[in-house]
Image 1 (tube, rainbow, N blue to C red):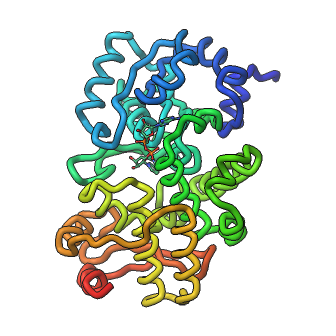
Image 2 (spheres, rainbow, N blue to C red):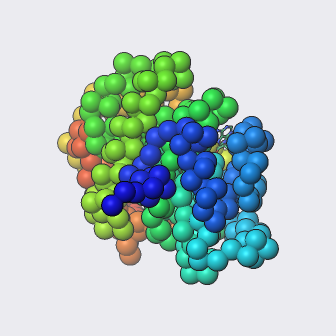
Image 3 (spheres, rainbow, N blue to C red):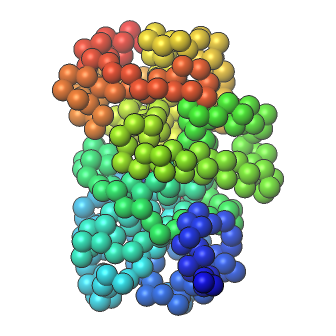
Length: 340
Ligand code: NAD
Protein backbone atom coordinates (compact mmCIF):
# COMPACT_ATOMS: atom_id res chain seq x y z
CA UNK A 1 0.00 0.00 0.00
CA UNK A 2 1.35 3.42 -0.93
CA UNK A 3 0.96 5.90 1.92
CA UNK A 4 0.14 9.52 1.22
CA UNK A 5 2.38 12.16 2.82
CA UNK A 6 0.12 12.72 5.86
CA UNK A 7 -0.02 8.98 6.50
CA UNK A 8 3.78 8.88 6.25
CA UNK A 9 3.99 11.68 8.84
CA UNK A 10 1.58 9.83 11.13
CA UNK A 11 3.50 6.60 10.72
CA UNK A 12 6.87 8.20 11.45
CA UNK A 13 5.22 10.25 14.20
CA UNK A 14 8.36 12.27 15.06
CA UNK A 15 9.21 14.16 11.90
CA UNK A 16 11.94 16.73 11.24
CA UNK A 17 11.49 19.17 8.37
CA UNK A 18 10.33 22.60 7.25
CA UNK A 19 6.77 23.75 7.90
CA UNK A 20 6.19 25.17 4.41
CA UNK A 21 7.82 22.39 2.46
CA UNK A 22 6.96 19.32 4.48
CA UNK A 23 3.65 19.66 6.32
CA UNK A 24 1.66 22.77 5.36
CA UNK A 25 -0.12 21.24 2.36
CA UNK A 26 -0.93 18.06 4.28
CA UNK A 27 -2.50 20.06 7.11
CA UNK A 28 -4.52 22.18 4.69
CA UNK A 29 -5.87 19.01 3.12
CA UNK A 30 -7.28 17.91 6.51
CA UNK A 31 -9.98 19.54 8.61
CA UNK A 32 -7.29 21.32 10.63
CA UNK A 33 -7.55 24.03 13.26
CA UNK A 34 -4.27 25.48 14.50
CA UNK A 35 -3.94 26.56 18.14
CA UNK A 36 -1.05 29.01 17.94
CA UNK A 37 0.82 30.76 20.72
CA UNK A 38 0.31 34.51 20.19
CA UNK A 39 4.04 35.34 20.05
CA UNK A 40 4.67 32.60 17.51
CA UNK A 41 1.75 33.89 15.48
CA UNK A 42 3.11 37.45 15.53
CA UNK A 43 6.59 36.35 14.49
CA UNK A 44 5.54 33.87 11.79
CA UNK A 45 2.10 35.12 10.71
CA UNK A 46 2.68 34.55 6.99
CA UNK A 47 3.08 30.79 7.49
CA UNK A 48 -0.38 30.44 8.96
CA UNK A 49 -2.46 32.73 6.76
CA UNK A 50 -4.44 30.01 4.97
CA UNK A 51 -5.55 28.17 8.13
CA UNK A 52 -8.45 28.19 10.56
CA UNK A 53 -6.75 29.23 13.76
CA UNK A 54 -7.18 30.00 17.43
CA UNK A 55 -4.61 32.33 18.96
CA UNK A 56 -3.58 31.34 22.47
CA UNK A 57 -2.48 33.94 25.01
CA UNK A 58 1.18 33.33 25.75
CA UNK A 59 2.71 32.35 29.10
CA UNK A 60 2.26 29.93 31.99
CA UNK A 61 -0.25 32.30 33.64
CA UNK A 62 -2.68 31.40 30.84
CA UNK A 63 -2.29 27.65 31.14
CA UNK A 64 -5.58 27.42 32.99
CA UNK A 65 -9.28 26.62 32.83
CA UNK A 66 -10.17 30.08 31.56
CA UNK A 67 -8.08 29.66 28.39
CA UNK A 68 -9.40 26.13 27.90
CA UNK A 69 -12.96 27.46 28.11
CA UNK A 70 -12.23 30.14 25.52
CA UNK A 71 -10.81 27.51 23.16
CA UNK A 72 -13.90 25.30 23.61
CA UNK A 73 -16.05 28.30 22.61
CA UNK A 74 -13.96 28.94 19.51
CA UNK A 75 -14.17 25.27 18.55
CA UNK A 76 -17.96 25.47 18.83
CA UNK A 77 -17.90 28.55 16.58
CA UNK A 78 -15.75 26.63 14.04
CA UNK A 79 -18.17 23.67 14.27
CA UNK A 80 -15.30 21.37 15.15
CA UNK A 81 -16.18 17.70 15.34
CA UNK A 82 -14.40 14.44 16.01
CA UNK A 83 -12.79 14.44 12.58
CA UNK A 84 -11.11 17.79 13.32
CA UNK A 85 -7.33 17.77 13.64
CA UNK A 86 -6.21 20.21 16.33
CA UNK A 87 -2.57 21.25 15.95
CA UNK A 88 -0.82 22.98 18.84
CA UNK A 89 1.93 25.36 17.70
CA UNK A 90 4.12 27.00 20.31
CA UNK A 91 6.01 26.10 23.45
CA UNK A 92 5.02 23.65 26.14
CA UNK A 93 2.16 25.85 27.27
CA UNK A 94 0.52 25.75 23.82
CA UNK A 95 1.12 22.02 23.32
CA UNK A 96 -0.07 21.14 26.86
CA UNK A 97 -3.28 23.19 26.49
CA UNK A 98 -3.95 21.95 22.96
CA UNK A 99 -3.46 18.34 24.08
CA UNK A 100 -5.81 18.87 27.02
CA UNK A 101 -8.49 20.47 24.85
CA UNK A 102 -8.11 17.74 22.22
CA UNK A 103 -8.49 15.05 24.89
CA UNK A 104 -11.62 16.56 26.41
CA UNK A 105 -13.59 18.35 23.68
CA UNK A 106 -16.31 15.94 22.49
CA UNK A 107 -14.39 13.29 24.47
CA UNK A 108 -11.51 13.45 22.05
CA UNK A 109 -10.30 15.13 18.87
CA UNK A 110 -7.28 14.18 16.80
CA UNK A 111 -4.22 16.26 17.62
CA UNK A 112 -0.67 16.98 16.51
CA UNK A 113 2.06 19.32 17.73
CA UNK A 114 4.55 21.68 16.14
CA UNK A 115 6.79 22.71 19.05
CA UNK A 116 8.51 26.07 18.60
CA UNK A 117 10.62 26.41 21.76
CA UNK A 118 13.75 24.37 22.44
CA UNK A 119 12.11 23.07 25.62
CA UNK A 120 9.03 21.89 23.77
CA UNK A 121 11.14 20.32 21.00
CA UNK A 122 13.32 18.31 23.37
CA UNK A 123 10.68 17.55 25.97
CA UNK A 124 7.16 18.99 26.36
CA UNK A 125 5.73 17.97 22.98
CA UNK A 126 6.80 14.34 23.35
CA UNK A 127 5.02 11.78 25.47
CA UNK A 128 1.33 12.57 25.35
CA UNK A 129 1.04 14.14 28.79
CA UNK A 130 -1.00 17.31 28.83
CA UNK A 131 -2.39 19.50 31.54
CA UNK A 132 -3.30 22.85 33.02
CA UNK A 133 -2.38 24.58 36.27
CA UNK A 134 -4.78 25.18 39.13
CA UNK A 135 -3.45 28.18 41.03
CA UNK A 136 0.12 27.43 42.07
CA UNK A 137 -0.37 23.68 41.47
CA UNK A 138 1.25 22.98 38.14
CA UNK A 139 -0.30 20.46 35.77
CA UNK A 140 -2.69 19.35 38.52
CA UNK A 141 -5.41 18.55 35.99
CA UNK A 142 -4.61 16.73 32.77
CA UNK A 143 -4.81 13.58 30.70
CA UNK A 144 -2.68 11.33 28.55
CA UNK A 145 -3.31 11.68 24.82
CA UNK A 146 -0.68 10.72 22.28
CA UNK A 147 -0.48 13.23 19.40
CA UNK A 148 -0.73 11.75 15.91
CA UNK A 149 2.54 13.46 15.08
CA UNK A 150 5.12 15.88 16.39
CA UNK A 151 6.72 17.97 13.66
CA UNK A 152 10.06 19.62 14.43
CA UNK A 153 11.17 22.67 12.45
CA UNK A 154 14.28 24.29 13.97
CA UNK A 155 13.66 27.46 11.92
CA UNK A 156 11.07 28.52 14.50
CA UNK A 157 13.88 28.72 17.06
CA UNK A 158 15.44 31.66 15.20
CA UNK A 159 12.94 34.03 16.84
CA UNK A 160 13.17 32.43 20.29
CA UNK A 161 14.28 34.79 23.09
CA UNK A 162 17.61 33.90 24.74
CA UNK A 163 16.02 32.99 28.09
CA UNK A 164 13.82 30.41 26.34
CA UNK A 165 16.89 28.78 24.79
CA UNK A 166 18.35 28.58 28.29
CA UNK A 167 15.15 26.94 29.61
CA UNK A 168 15.40 24.24 26.96
CA UNK A 169 18.99 23.54 27.99
CA UNK A 170 17.79 22.53 31.47
CA UNK A 171 15.72 19.67 30.04
CA UNK A 172 18.62 18.56 27.83
CA UNK A 173 20.88 18.45 30.89
CA UNK A 174 18.16 16.47 32.66
CA UNK A 175 18.03 13.85 29.87
CA UNK A 176 21.82 13.56 29.91
CA UNK A 177 21.92 13.17 33.71
CA UNK A 178 19.32 10.40 33.88
CA UNK A 179 20.08 8.47 30.68
CA UNK A 180 23.06 9.39 28.59
CA UNK A 181 26.61 10.14 29.72
CA UNK A 182 27.68 10.67 26.10
CA UNK A 183 25.12 13.43 25.69
CA UNK A 184 26.40 14.86 29.00
CA UNK A 185 29.95 14.90 27.57
CA UNK A 186 28.73 16.46 24.31
CA UNK A 187 26.98 19.23 26.22
CA UNK A 188 30.15 19.75 28.28
CA UNK A 189 32.17 20.19 25.07
CA UNK A 190 29.85 22.86 23.66
CA UNK A 191 28.08 26.03 24.67
CA UNK A 192 24.68 27.51 23.96
CA UNK A 193 26.34 29.85 21.46
CA UNK A 194 27.71 26.80 19.59
CA UNK A 195 24.19 25.33 19.37
CA UNK A 196 22.75 28.60 18.09
CA UNK A 197 25.48 29.00 15.48
CA UNK A 198 25.69 25.43 14.26
CA UNK A 199 22.44 24.12 12.74
CA UNK A 200 23.82 20.59 12.30
CA UNK A 201 24.95 20.35 15.93
CA UNK A 202 21.62 21.76 17.13
CA UNK A 203 19.65 19.23 15.08
CA UNK A 204 21.85 16.39 16.30
CA UNK A 205 21.38 17.35 19.96
CA UNK A 206 17.60 17.84 19.56
CA UNK A 207 17.31 14.46 17.83
CA UNK A 208 19.28 12.75 20.62
CA UNK A 209 16.92 14.26 23.19
CA UNK A 210 13.80 13.32 21.23
CA UNK A 211 15.12 9.78 20.98
CA UNK A 212 15.78 9.55 24.74
CA UNK A 213 12.29 10.73 25.66
CA UNK A 214 10.58 8.75 22.89
CA UNK A 215 12.27 5.53 24.06
CA UNK A 216 11.29 6.08 27.68
CA UNK A 217 7.66 6.93 26.97
CA UNK A 218 7.24 4.07 24.53
CA UNK A 219 8.40 1.66 27.28
CA UNK A 220 6.19 3.28 29.90
CA UNK A 221 3.42 5.43 28.38
CA UNK A 222 1.45 5.89 31.63
CA UNK A 223 4.30 6.62 34.03
CA UNK A 224 4.19 3.38 36.00
CA UNK A 225 7.98 2.97 36.15
CA UNK A 226 10.85 4.25 34.01
CA UNK A 227 9.00 7.37 32.89
CA UNK A 228 9.08 8.67 36.45
CA UNK A 229 12.80 9.30 35.91
CA UNK A 230 11.87 12.21 33.65
CA UNK A 231 10.75 14.01 36.79
CA UNK A 232 14.40 14.44 37.82
CA UNK A 233 14.68 17.99 39.18
CA UNK A 234 10.95 18.59 38.79
CA UNK A 235 9.67 17.77 42.29
CA UNK A 236 11.33 20.75 43.92
CA UNK A 237 11.35 22.56 40.55
CA UNK A 238 7.57 22.64 40.23
CA UNK A 239 7.17 23.77 43.83
CA UNK A 240 9.42 26.81 43.40
CA UNK A 241 8.54 27.70 39.78
CA UNK A 242 5.11 29.22 40.30
CA UNK A 243 5.75 30.40 43.85
CA UNK A 244 8.69 32.57 42.83
CA UNK A 245 7.79 33.24 39.18
CA UNK A 246 10.94 31.50 38.00
CA UNK A 247 11.40 30.28 34.45
CA UNK A 248 10.70 26.55 34.12
CA UNK A 249 14.32 25.80 33.17
CA UNK A 250 15.67 27.78 36.11
CA UNK A 251 13.37 25.97 38.54
CA UNK A 252 14.33 22.57 37.08
CA UNK A 253 18.04 23.40 37.29
CA UNK A 254 17.69 24.33 40.98
CA UNK A 255 15.66 21.15 41.50
CA UNK A 256 18.31 19.03 39.76
CA UNK A 257 21.08 20.41 41.95
CA UNK A 258 18.99 19.71 45.06
CA UNK A 259 18.33 16.17 43.80
CA UNK A 260 22.11 15.70 43.32
CA UNK A 261 22.70 16.69 46.93
CA UNK A 262 19.97 14.29 48.06
CA UNK A 263 21.52 11.60 45.83
CA UNK A 264 24.87 12.01 47.58
CA UNK A 265 23.06 11.57 50.88
CA UNK A 266 20.92 8.54 49.94
CA UNK A 267 22.56 6.95 46.90
CA UNK A 268 25.96 6.18 45.41
CA UNK A 269 26.32 9.59 43.80
CA UNK A 270 29.64 11.38 44.38
CA UNK A 271 30.42 14.97 45.32
CA UNK A 272 32.61 15.16 42.21
CA UNK A 273 29.63 14.33 40.00
CA UNK A 274 27.44 16.90 41.77
CA UNK A 275 30.19 19.40 40.98
CA UNK A 276 30.20 18.35 37.30
CA UNK A 277 26.43 18.84 37.09
CA UNK A 278 26.66 22.19 38.86
CA UNK A 279 29.31 23.26 36.32
CA UNK A 280 27.18 22.14 33.36
CA UNK A 281 24.13 23.95 34.76
CA UNK A 282 26.18 27.13 35.05
CA UNK A 283 27.81 26.64 31.63
CA UNK A 284 24.31 26.88 30.12
CA UNK A 285 23.52 30.07 32.11
CA UNK A 286 21.21 28.41 34.62
CA UNK A 287 21.11 28.89 38.40
CA UNK A 288 21.67 25.98 40.77
CA UNK A 289 20.41 27.49 44.03
CA UNK A 290 17.71 29.88 45.22
CA UNK A 291 16.91 31.20 48.68
CA UNK A 292 13.35 29.95 48.91
CA UNK A 293 11.16 29.86 52.02
CA UNK A 294 11.45 26.26 53.16
CA UNK A 295 8.08 26.00 54.93
CA UNK A 296 6.24 27.61 52.03
CA UNK A 297 7.87 25.26 49.53
CA UNK A 298 7.36 22.24 51.76
CA UNK A 299 3.62 22.91 51.95
CA UNK A 300 3.50 22.73 48.13
CA UNK A 301 5.82 19.70 47.93
CA UNK A 302 3.38 17.82 50.14
CA UNK A 303 0.75 18.18 47.38
CA UNK A 304 3.09 16.69 44.75
CA UNK A 305 1.47 14.17 42.42
CA UNK A 306 4.29 11.71 43.21
CA UNK A 307 3.30 11.61 46.88
CA UNK A 308 1.91 8.40 48.35
CA UNK A 309 0.56 8.84 51.90
CA UNK A 310 3.59 9.91 53.96
CA UNK A 311 6.18 9.18 51.30
CA UNK A 312 7.27 10.95 48.17
CA UNK A 313 8.96 9.31 45.19
CA UNK A 314 12.10 11.30 44.46
CA UNK A 315 14.30 10.77 41.41
CA UNK A 316 17.93 10.35 42.43
CA UNK A 317 21.12 9.68 40.48
CA UNK A 318 23.37 6.65 40.95
CA UNK A 319 25.89 8.16 38.57
CA UNK A 320 25.76 10.56 35.62
CA UNK A 321 23.61 8.76 33.04
CA UNK A 322 21.80 6.48 35.51
CA UNK A 323 18.85 7.35 37.74
CA UNK A 324 16.35 5.59 39.95
CA UNK A 325 13.36 6.56 42.09
CA UNK A 326 13.68 6.50 45.85
CA UNK A 327 10.85 6.63 48.37
CA UNK A 328 11.58 9.24 51.00
CA UNK A 329 9.32 10.12 53.91
CA UNK A 330 7.83 13.59 53.92
CA UNK A 331 9.43 14.23 57.32
CA UNK A 332 12.92 13.20 56.15
CA UNK A 333 12.52 15.36 53.08
CA UNK A 334 11.58 18.28 55.29
CA UNK A 335 14.68 17.75 57.43
CA UNK A 336 16.98 17.49 54.41
CA UNK A 337 15.43 20.60 52.85
CA UNK A 338 15.97 22.50 56.09
CA UNK A 339 19.68 21.60 56.30
CA UNK A 340 20.58 21.89 52.58
P1 NAD B 1 6.08 28.56 26.77
O1 NAD B 1 5.18 27.71 26.03
O2 NAD B 1 5.49 29.50 27.78
O3 NAD B 1 6.97 29.39 25.75
C1 NAD B 1 7.92 30.29 26.25
C2 NAD B 1 7.80 31.65 25.59
O4 NAD B 1 8.34 31.57 24.27
C3 NAD B 1 6.40 32.16 25.45
O5 NAD B 1 6.40 33.55 25.74
C4 NAD B 1 6.08 31.96 23.98
O6 NAD B 1 5.16 32.91 23.52
C5 NAD B 1 7.43 32.15 23.35
N1 NAD B 1 7.69 31.46 22.08
C6 NAD B 1 7.42 30.18 21.79
N2 NAD B 1 7.96 29.86 20.60
C7 NAD B 1 8.56 30.98 20.13
C8 NAD B 1 9.27 31.26 18.95
N3 NAD B 1 9.57 30.33 18.05
N4 NAD B 1 9.71 32.53 18.77
C9 NAD B 1 9.45 33.48 19.71
N5 NAD B 1 8.81 33.26 20.86
C10 NAD B 1 8.36 32.01 21.07
O7 NAD B 1 7.16 27.71 27.60
P2 NAD B 1 7.99 26.38 27.31
O8 NAD B 1 9.23 26.58 28.07
O9 NAD B 1 8.06 26.04 25.89
O10 NAD B 1 7.13 25.25 28.01
C11 NAD B 1 6.93 25.24 29.41
C12 NAD B 1 5.66 24.48 29.68
O11 NAD B 1 5.82 23.14 29.21
C13 NAD B 1 5.31 24.37 31.15
O12 NAD B 1 3.95 24.67 31.30
C14 NAD B 1 5.58 22.93 31.50
O13 NAD B 1 4.73 22.45 32.52
C15 NAD B 1 5.30 22.25 30.19
N6 NAD B 1 5.96 20.96 30.04
C16 NAD B 1 5.20 19.90 29.68
C17 NAD B 1 5.77 18.65 29.52
C18 NAD B 1 4.94 17.48 29.10
O14 NAD B 1 5.43 16.36 29.09
N7 NAD B 1 3.69 17.69 28.75
C19 NAD B 1 7.15 18.49 29.73
C20 NAD B 1 7.91 19.61 30.07
C21 NAD B 1 7.30 20.85 30.21
